[in-house]
Amino acid sequence: MDGAPGEVCYFAPGTLQWEELGIGHSAWLSWIASGGTAAFYAGVRWPGWEQEVGSLALDQGMSFYPFLWSTQARDDLASTSRRAVPIEELFALQAER
Image 1 (tube, rainbow, N blue to C red):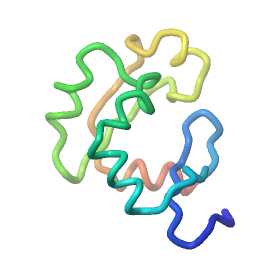
Image 2 (image 1 turned 180 degrees about the horizontal axis):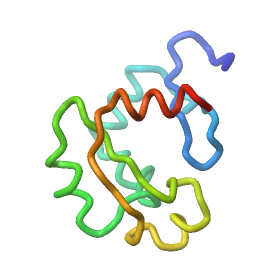
Image 3 (image 1 turned 90 degrees about the vertical axis):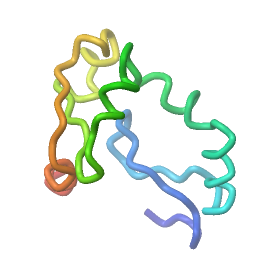
């Protein structure tokens, strides 16, 4: 990743690559505060996601199977298997890539 210093990047589930958002940290925080994440994440939210994600501890994340970038998950996200896991497990999975 050769993004500009201070540019916000994220690991995109659709490409399995780090992608630049084209904005710096201050603009990113403003975007979040103004509700920008609703449209950004619309394709990876399922009915009842608020309750499932809201119950996570601060050291947990969601594990999905099939993976969110898979055709199966994109075709029927609500039917994916989801569970809370330690965030270290998710980081380790990404590091194996």
